[in-house]
Every structure is written in C-alpha cells, then in structure tokens.
Image 1 (cartoon, rainbow, N blue to C red):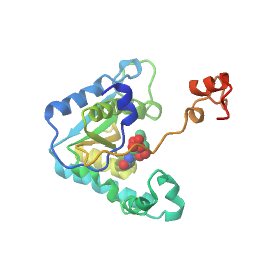
Image 2: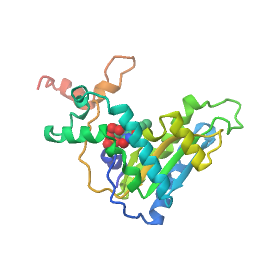
Image 3: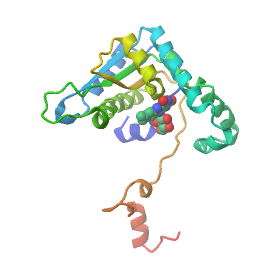
Image 4: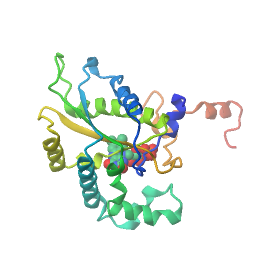
Length: 237
Ligand SMILES: Cc1cc2nc3c(=O)[nH]c(=O)nc-3n(C[C@H](O)[C@H](O)[C@H](O)COP(=O)(O)O)c2cc1C
C-alpha cells in the first residue's frame, strides 16, 4: 500500500476476530516504531508487547470499559449525538449505547497484540531536559502511528485505547502489574488485531481551510483547487 493511501484509509478498528497474527508480521509492525523521530534521537520510549498474557488483555479491557461508563455513561443521549453525525441515523442509538455501557471498548480482549507505550523524562544525558508534559506523549505517539500505519498496510487493524490509562489509579495498577518503574510512564495503548470488517471512511476531517492558516493565525489556507477556480473566475460554482 502506498504511504499516502495508508494515511488516508487508516481507521480506528474496535472489533477484532481474535485470530492470531504471524510473528513475522508483528515484528515488522513493532520494528517501525524504532524508526520514529525523537528529540536528540534520545529514543526515550519503551514498549511492552503483550501477546500471550490474556489476563492482562482482559484487565485492560475491563478498566477501559469501567472508564467509558464513568466518562460517557452519564451523558444525555441528545447532547452527544452530534459526535456520531457521520453514522446513518439508524446506527446511532446502538453505537451510542455501546459507548455508554462501555462495550465498544472491550476490544483489547480480542486483540492479538496490545502494545503499551511508555516514556520517561529521566532517561536522558541531554543538557536540555525534555519534560514529560511536552515530550512524553509526542515521542510515544510518533512510534505508535508508525506501527499503526504498517499494521494497516498489512491488512490489520489498530485501536488506540487511552481510556485504559487516563485515570491515575488505573495507570498505577498497570504499572504495578507490569513492573513499570516510577521513572517511566505509560502513555498510550495500541491494540493490534485482525479486523472483523473493514470500516467505512469517516469521521471525516475538517477541511484544509479549517485547520491550516496561511502566514498568520486566522487567515485560511486556500487549497490549490480553490486558487485555480479563483484564477479561472469559477469560485461561485
Ligand atoms: C491520543 C488518542 C487517544 C484516543 N483514545 C481512544 C480511546 O480511549 N478509545 C478508543 O476506542 N479510541 C481512542 N482513540 C481513537 C480516536 O477516537 C480516533 O482516532 C478518532 O475518532 C478518529 O477516528 P479514526 O481513527 O477512525 O480516523 C484515540 C486516539 C488518539 C490519537
């Protein structure tokens, strides 16, 4: 798959068949994370790769679901429907229910591999300190996205499960169970598996004019196509 195509067709996959992924493919996926950029090439990331420990996968699923019920469970249906605008009307109530009762987030159970990305601000011989707040998520996300894109290009699916580690008590429990030292912090959880089905594209992204400013804040970037239409006097078409 071409890189641009992989970038544009990647989606979050939250439904896995539970099938095994060949070790060679998992290794290709993991290896991609090593090539991610990091400040001064410090590579202050470590990844715990969970494949065999089903109890740990179940635990991650359970705490994610618990957190989802906490976060989404009390939200009035009418207020949050806008977030699912990209789904056809008839699918929304079901999807929303799955979000509220947490079942949408049970997928770590069925993932072939669950990767826990950790970062540290102590692991450095650099003069400048790269603090966790500014750099921790950044470095781990760089590696995770590389893995995500490689997995997708090989036909697998990934879901990023932040819910599992967004509560400090859950983070503590994960660190305790996996022996993560205090100097390292779990930043993200990437679940990799065989997708039950291909997902349609969307939620769509904001248009380029909405997220890029030209030269100054607030001055919308105009796509080439729009610029061309203007030149040709067709901008009102
Ligand atoms: C930092 C981060 C945290 C996320 N947290 C979760 C999560 O806890 N559970 C989940 O199922 N998806 C999570 N996602 C996936 C997003 O919901 C998803 O990327 C977004 O809705 C866009 O959809 P797409 O990935 O299918 O394009 C997260 C993504 C990122 C980058």
